Length: 262
Length: 303
Image (cartoon, rainbow over all chains, first blue to last red; front, top):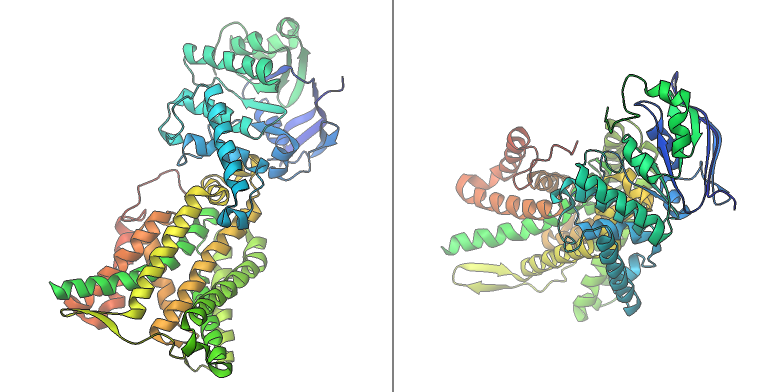
């Protein structure tokens, strides 16, 4: 089976600083892949390249046999990729369900004229959009929180809402940027369950960035390790764990053994 | 007591106009973090479109007398269409190329557009005030000492109608939701598949439609159109938007009525000639002491 996502020799420079240097990776359909590395390794830069926030200085990104590194931001969603953010970026003053509805917009046919005239087809479509949104919220564990403003949700709920919103785009690839960051062990365990359910029940392909080794080792099938913008290792979790270069990169922080957050 | 009611009604009438115009400022600010200083000129162009429409009916038909409902409605629609077309063009050529420029650049560009439109109309009209044909039945509803003219009632009802319509649009429709999403976080909205450029254009379209309609009706109310007529209402509506907390839709509505009523009361207690002074003193005070608006909540997140 051809890879769903293929990152080919991507380099990204910011005036003198090379945030990503010739990084390549492939992600197979319906797998959970992890990207790890110490702070400043280029993990978030990689996500920003994948989602069109940054253009690669050189190299290419292919998704489902199509080159995507030149697409405008809103084209990424249309292509079938969605993401969450390390520092939560919900629409804070909109309700939970509205956040999810915005994600569904590209799949609705209503335009400006029909939004005002409102023929029955529009009403029907909107009703089904609301129903889907409620189901997504339930899947993400946010039952009965639909009409709460996003900013009033608890921290863990906000992270879940970001996932529900990302799913509303109906992506085939979901990028999760530190999904358990700042969570207590109970919340983190719930999040890991949710990530597994995304793959098993929704047949999603997932790439996640993580600091927490426990999460990465427990949930990812393949891991790519970045350090100073370069790929220093990749493979199955147990392989990566044994890799001398990985151990060296993390040496002194103790992160490889314990759960540690930098 | 009756005097109070009179002042209150007069203030609500003009306040409704401020509120309708203020929505354009606040919505554009919401999505672009920019004050569209040419917004008052959209109002002015709406008034002229309304004037030319009514004038054409006057010259070529008797419809202004036989079917005023139709001519008034078409004047309002003409005002809306004119303002919308101008807004789309100005967004395209004066603002969009400056989307990533320093914040001052689009502001200066907006002032340029404003001066341009005003001077076009000065040229077209030879700087003469254009007098509207009389389409509205004269007369008023009297209640004791309180007297409310028909045009005033029309203005009052119409502004409430537009405010409700806009509220439903913003809260209930997909496009309204996109506008709110872009206002909160443009990049994230784009990543969720919202077409940001189209949403920004729609914001201009909606704001301009309201300003154009307000211009046409206001023109009928004051019975003249002049090239400079957009300036004071424009600045007042901007004041209303700031009073309500710039970027906030309900704030702009409340701010418009608040300003209209304050002005109206000040004509009684301070003197009619100080009406504008009162409005701008209010603006300065709010900017100094509560820059997030009288009704707005302090939001540190908003830059």
